[in-house]
Each structure stands twice: as structure tokens, then as C-alpha cells.
Length: 201
Length: 201
DNA sequence: GTCTATATTGAGATAGAC
DNA sequence: GTCTATCTCAATATAGAC
Image (tube, rainbow over all chains, first blue to last red; front, side, top):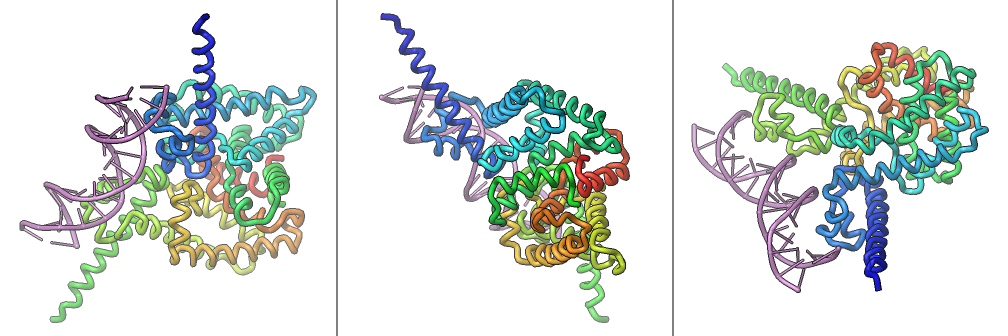
């Protein structure tokens, strides 16, 4: 007659709700952005009260940080699961495609470069920065490799390519195409990849 | 002994201050974005009180709208002043270069696609939308011409190119390069143009 | 742990004296 | 037209009952 099962069950429910909160936060963030997202929005959409929400996350900043960390971990997992036989360019292309599809499905862009406040907040978030740096190291290595193999322009500095690559993961053209063109998601992804790697020409 | 000169002089000073306010708003907007920019910031930086600021602009939305309208008019003037002998691709390149330099000098990006609130506010701003549509018509014509002449990819739909073109004017890679690389502004512009038109390869 | 009700703060906007 | 002082309201965060 241990009481552990009950506690464990409660914990499990708690964890599940935590994921539900993060899911909601992700959608709201991607729709309204950080500043316009309110804790009332989140609590209301999840179907709990605000104080309960604060039992899970002690501040708005922490909540948003965790949502972004989960996203980064998704990216890191995706990279880790990539076929080791793929070349650096294929990996870069695959990850960009993944990021675009996540966004088209209502997910978040990496690196919300939007608000100075958000950037600053994330820079103070060690857990987040750890993952950013890990992902960045891997991407930088891929870009350098691809440049060495002549698959990416050697005329461009590595950081120009790398920053531009990040920028493509949050390219606003995606939302505009989704909203104002009748294109399928597959077509949007295909075209955005082409523009990123080949340019307008 | 007409009183007109005095009134005219006052009016002139009023107009001058209006420009000063817009200058300040432009810088603050580009640094902190819409949500973090406060009317206290603006009043403080201009050196006037908040009620005086509200004599010039009856709301924050109107102030920001006017700042963005001034920017768009700069772009329209720039396009109008372009050598008529230039081809469509050269014009597109020149305008993108202009936009990047404006931003590197502390100016604003076109189309602050950042916040849903800002987008919505601008859509309601007829004066702003009038200029957006005018600029958009001209750019669309250039892209179509360039595609017909085979200077831009004919595989890509026109709106993909057009939206991506807009996105390059507010590419966050610019700020990252400015902040984290030791590159000169000229080099940043050169590289960003190359990435936009030729892609990473 | 969950809720209702409330404290607190920050920022847009204005009243009213000069 | 300009300012000081203030209003108002929305949103983060919490106190306290159950």
C-alpha cells in the first residue's frame, strides 16, 4: 500500500499539463509575439487559472524561455538523427526545411531577433544559451565543411552565410506567402529553399 | 505690420520640431522596436514634455505611422530619382542597397513584420497603405520585367521573389554582422546583396 | 494545487495652471 | 503651447480561502 503510485500519477499529470502549457505558449507566441502574449491568454487557452500557471512557471520570461528551449532541443534532435552519410550541404538544407515546416505548422522561428527585450532575456538564460551555442557550433562546422568542398560560396565569409542561414529560418516571406498566396506548404518550402541557396536568379 | 511673419516663424519652428521628433522616434524604434518604445523615451530624448509631444502626434500609433510614412517616401523618392536607363535588376539592386544603408545608419526596416499589432495598425493607416501599394506596384513591375528578360529566375513565382526581396530589406543578419563581426558597413552591404541575389552558393 | 480577488507597476493619454 | 501632476487601464504577479 505504498503511496508512491499516487504521487507518481500526480506528477505525471503535472508534467503533461506542463507540456500542454508549452504547446499553447508556442502557438500564441508565434501568432502574437512576446509582448502581446499575456499570461491570461495562456491560462485561458489551457483552461487553468493564472495562479496555477504560475505554479508551473514562475514568470513569463521563464515560460517563454522553456518554450524556446524545447524548440532548440527539437532542432538538436533533428540534426542528431540525420543520416551520417549526408553531406554538409544536404544537412543544412534538411534542417532549414525542418525549421520552415515547424513554422508553417504554427511553430516558432529560431532566434526571435524581433525584440531587444527578448534577445536580452534569452542571453541571460543559461540553459537556452547552452543549446544555442551547441547548435551554432554544429552549423558552423557544416558551413565551413561545405565551403571547403566548394558546395557553398568561398567568396562569402562564414559568418555571413551562417547569420543569413539563421535569418532564413525566420524569414517573414513565409508568413506572407502563407497568408496572401494560394500556395501549398510544400511549394512554399520548396521555393524558400531555392531562394535561400540559389538566390533570386 | 502683418502678423503673418510671426505665425509663419512659429509654424516653421513647430515643423522643425516635428522632424526632430520623427528623427528620434526612428532611432528609438530601430533600437527597441514598437512595443518597448515609450512616449516618455521620445519626449525625453527630444527634450520636451509628454503633453507637448501629444500636441504634435495624437497617439503613439500616429507617431509611428508618420515615421514609417517618411521612410516609405524616402524609398519612393529614391526610386523616382533612379537613372531611367537602368535595367529592372539594377534598380532592384540599387534600392535594396539603399534600404540596407539606411538601416546600417540607424534607420528603420520597411515593413516591420515583427509584431502582429504593428502590422494591423499599419493596415488601418490609409496614408501608409497608399504608399506601400505604390511602392509595391513599382517593385512588382520591376520583378516581372526582370523575369521576362531572364535576369531573375522564371522558375520562381513573382510573389515569392517579391516577398523575399522585402524580407531582405529587414534581414536580421545585418544587425548580427554589425554587432558581432568586424566588417565595415560597405562589406556588409556587398555581402548581403550577393546573398540575396546569388544565394549561399 | 486550485481558484477568486487583489496588489503593483508601467505606460498611454490628459486636465488644468501658466 | 508648454509644463507638472494625474488619470486610466492592462498585464504581471501574488495573497489567502478552500
